[in-house]
Length: 305
Image 1 (cartoon, helix red, strand yellow):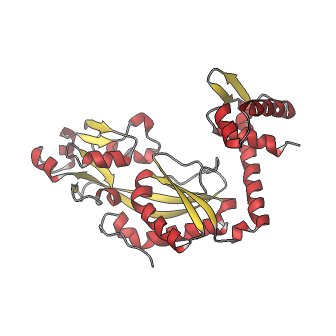
Image 2: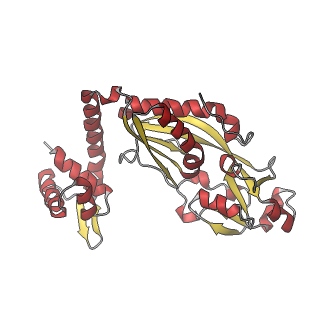
Image 3: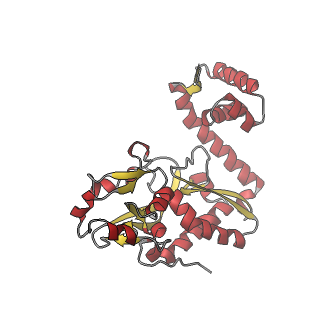
């Protein structure tokens, strides 16, 4: 039988930057982590990590074990919640992962209202320019732009949203006129860094002005938004973000409109924990009256009572 404590050390080392980082998170000495991993490999009968100057990297057998270990971890946590009665209480901590722009400009103010309504629930919010990994327990709930195609998750569509082309009036006044999509090739754009884009859903410029020069690129949509407000280039931005500023106006709004969706995702064993369920339901309730805001048809966000 595999020892749960050793499995826990194994998982932490796979998620950390090295022995010292894993030891700090586990609250033990790094030499203890090293010994326990070696003992665990002897118990399993297989080498799980390659050791080199860069630290520990998983072997093929190590990768295979991660999947099983994460399932065991989820089961242990679910059992602890159930037996302790915590999954039925509207109290405790919930961690919510979200895309950077949506999390910062839309979800954050709604979450503040949720916390005021539920004083015994604390919410940690992770607005990031990447996917949040639920299997590594980075969060309890994730709002993502891609629907998961595998994994033991509960998934529902949270909302549709629109992106449009934006510029400042000063930019439009000082550059060649934009009367059609064909005119866009002669203008500078702001966009993502190709080799660092975290989702194919973000490669929308290629369908609109593939040959246009990208004067400024960033992994952060908030950085793109801020750069667009400087009035030096065009940018394709989510309407819910661009319409926060009076400095930006839509360009070719009837010709350039991209529709995308946000998905609400939680691990199956976490979905029905009371505090997780409460936040899940609240997020869905919040987005329902904000359909026009997310599609750029209204600049006013709606709050639920």
